[in-house]
Length: 318
Ligand code: ADP
Ligand code: MG
Image: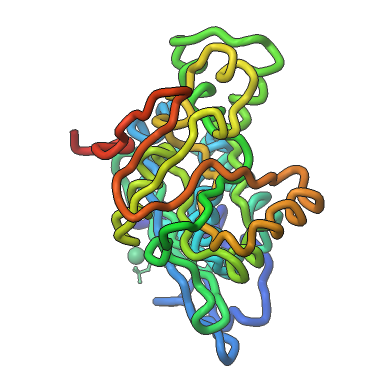
């Protein structure tokens, strides 16, 4: 759709997000040019949402736009990098102006809210797919990876786990929930809050971090593999809503994806910082769920120990 393409870009995807001083050239040339402040490193990530795989094709385009940015912001938060710019690659089945205006206006709103300028992208025709590439900055050496958890470190998670998984089950008619919880879980699914507020905390105290996109069980396994460690976590410590607790439906917290909370590891000497954090950030509480060990991966469940050693998150190629 060569002709349409330029019209679409011009109509919907120019001047999105703050035009900050560090953007020398944005949408419209062969490439974008940005200025990196001295002493900063660039942290880059990309996530694709495919219609029918990551979201039902009839999902509200405003929610799709929000989420395509939110999941990328969450990756940068997990690296302790401050989001700076993004690019958008859009594959569209056609030129559906209703869909495009709803998508673009939500993208604009979200980009404004997060002060994130859109500096370029690509537009083509095909099955609906949205790829966002995000770039952020971090003072040299202060990024946090999955690699440096050590035995004795505390394992923490932010917020509550399992709500997005419940939201999806609800939407797919696999589950019924009390009314107030329905709204809460659908919001968690459609409007996950990237935990950007944790960036300074992670830079200062965390030995390792990951964002929980595929479920705690599998995502923590990635940290353990990268750090060559084990873990012991306690099921009853996992922060969940009262319904999951009552129904003992912890599989939503452990195995369902899309929560976009942060799981991080903290040398035990920083334990006191957790309480300080929670006093100041009641909307982004950190909860200790266990400890890094030398080896093995276990869930304590009352008297029982469940071996999570073969844990897998959601896998696209199963
Ligand atoms: P090229 O032919 O050089 O690949 P394009 O025609 O794909 O260039 O894009 C023209 C300009 O529009 C580029 O600056 C590109 O970054 C930008 N662009 C294309 N699609 C999008 C989009 N969906 N969102 C933002 N910018 C886009
Ligand atoms: Mg192109």
